[in-house]
Length: 318
Image (tube, rainbow, N blue to C red; front, side, top):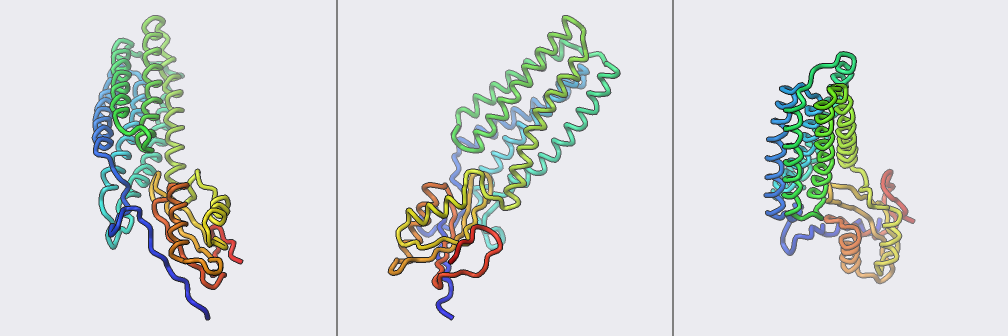
């Protein structure tokens, strides 16, 4: 029957004796994201109130876009906060997927919000309602200042971190919404043409829809164990065979994301004659970590040269 497969050690990249899947978290990142979330969420409520009092649907739509900002900041903070919790026997990867689940639910909520705004906008186009341009202008200007403040806060953190970068892009999008609301308020003040308000609300809804779709697509891809977009499995297999001495073949190659920016992999490796299994395993994990940013890799040695049939993944065992 030959020698059975040997499951090599997991590589957690946490140092000797550690067994934690949590990514390293900067305390400054967590602080600036949380401060940005509080400021954005607070003004979002104020903008909803201002929209209701002034009769501006565009302000309410902009508040909906600020909701996407607040959600992005909340998810980033949750990723930092919960990511520090160590794994246990029931949750072997800790709580890192919490932000993915929250993002999926948030995306569904945003789709419902867009549907409501579109319905109200169509009704107002056929039956225009009065809009108080003065309060609308004041609230829109305050929204612009708040977004500038949040963007500055985020810039004080690690701007290369995936969560920080994503939150900054959300805030930049909302800056455009605030500018558009200011332009609409000025136009209504000087011309009295109120249809600009529902028209603008539809345009802002498109921004919300775009953000919601990207969030839903990314969250669903992770939940479905999809391969990260920056990973080419066939190219990775060839790279491992060419760059790691002692590797004769790579099969059963699977790569997926535990959460955004944290990939994991499993694969079978067939050895060349005389190759040292420990050295090959260590070299494969180093290549995966250095070239593909894969923080967790499980490498299994295929002693017989042919693994069991694998219906999924990259399977090229000979």
